[in-house]
Image (cartoon, rainbow, N blue to C red):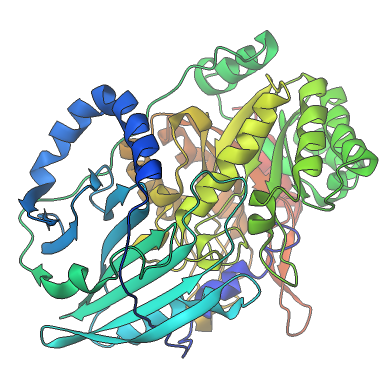
Length: 541
């Protein structure tokens, strides 16, 4: 959640109505840049050996045939065949979600999205909502192209090249092919205009579908040992996530976020528990990155350390007029800010959990691909770029928390959480987030959900995907629609069955109804004396 952008997120989930803006386009022909091809080929050769076993394990999912000037790619997971550029590398590591095909000039992601009987227009229109941001996105074409007995929707646009992204592919074209109750989405991003790279007709000229024959998979992550952590950070990481048999509890307390710790102190006295983790939110307040930035971050960290707490330090971009801030970051416009931020964290030297761009698979976040060309690579570049700035500034005390939302909104394959994963070396902790929002917005689909209803599906799925330790980075229970105290008691019992969740942070605040200012979801940890007593009885168990 985010005090600046997150309060309306649950409303946004249920207000995903049809956006009747069909943006559809076409393209032309192409020349390959051979200099860039050679550089790219050399880079690929350096990782070929490590990829060999992975490629062999993916072979059951697809077939690649030489067809003269083109190759013919058959995906057995999603049941289609398509003509592609001859030199493309195939990545089926997330074959349950999509196929990725790439060469130096072009990246193609292909998704098979279930839309039901009448869902094609909703899927296409809502997916392309980012085009309303005309400051960043230039709509170049929308139209239709016949594919067999159906009409494909074509959408093309571009944005400025991002100075901090190597070989940025800033020209886009999407082909959405409705077929039965599915839409086959061919998402292309290129470093040159489409007409210079062969157009798109060849992709759909021999596009065929068939019944899938194998089940897709998602490649599990690996834990990368951080040899550059300082001793205190390594000790804290091992203690919280591997050695402590109890869950470490944390809290977000709004007054403490403004350096008033009186209520947090009251909680700890009443509950007889010293919260070892404190959640704090920060954002991109300024581009210059000088004293005010350093003073704020330093105060957050030092005040927490003086109280014996590790900060779960959240950093998020803001909504702004005149374009998306993620693009500004990747243009280098916030380099001063980020270097100052990273330097202050590094000089602090004590352990910090840094949570960058959480809930990125939620359309309420400006850094979601929903708002940046439907392009999850943009988020990954954003994440990795900031990671490298911290590394350059000598931050040997940062535990990196990658934290998607428990459910993707919109719940489309191109927006799945795994598509945002930046890579094993960039992630130390997997964050889980799900709230029992109560039933204030019952008419919009909200319902009362137990801890197990919220977390069991996420946890079981994540156990198959991620090998890093887990923490619930923020969660809470509203009071409207059920017995909040009973929910909390059940949560304390249930969480013991989630052995890989080693920390959990309660969000102590409220969501307000924007129409009348009333409390829509009361998440307060001290809402009743009985709730305080429940925490007192269970936090130390």
